[in-house]
Image 1 (tube, rainbow, N blue to C red):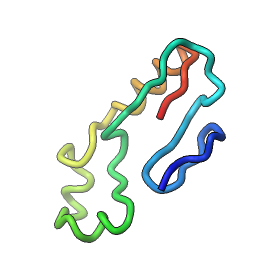
Image 2 (cartoon, rainbow, N blue to C red):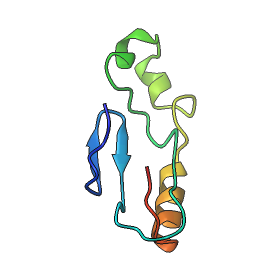
Image 3 (cartoon, one colour):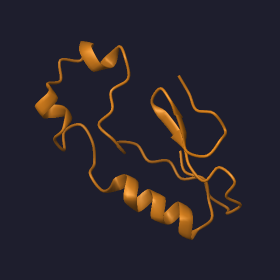
Image 4 (spheres, helix red, strand yellow):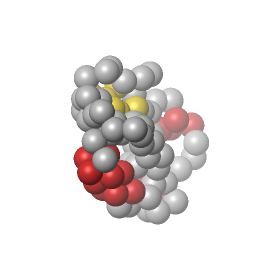
Amino acid sequence: MGASPESGVTTGAVAIEYAAGEGAFVFVCDHASNHFPPPYDQCLGVTEKEKSAHISWDPGALGVAKGLSNRLDSPLV
């Protein structure tokens, strides 16, 4: 599980966007989606309804992180 260094590529639970950013920061956005990679998608006892609720992710967090990454010319993980 991991990500390739190419911008926007997702493998498993990690994505890297704007990898070529030259800013002074690296942004990390946890709870960016409600994706549960295997085997966690089945073994945690979280229902499909719960996966789409705020209990599983922070709606809007990824948009804020992408905006900061773009504005500050910095990679986002």
